[in-house]
Image (tube, rainbow, N blue to C red; front, side):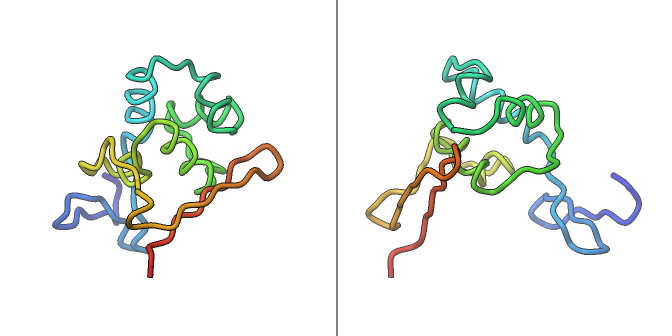
Amino acid sequence: MSEGDSVAGDGIKRRSVNNAYCVENLGARVREMRMAKKLSQRALASEARVPASTIARLETGDLGGLYTNSLASIAYILNCTSDYLLFGNSRKGSKPTSANYDISAETRDSEVVIRIKPKE
């Protein structure tokens, strides 16, 4: 832990300067879920409609330029939540369902944009 970081009661490290989350083990969780589905990095990238370099960078811990819609697409293909990938919360294997959420997806410039909103 670097100077200025603290661990909250929920076990998530936060930077005291701006309270930003420090995401650890995201790459390991992406790799674990990808391997469990027997997907190559290229296959996961193709299904999630993100560049293959995005998957490779994530798995090595490089989060630079990661878009939330890319992470959501990856989580969707891996059948888990973005929350699980980011923080390791025990929601592995659970997807939002249409019973509780309005879910829509569209393709924009070779990326899948998934919108998930709680039903009113």
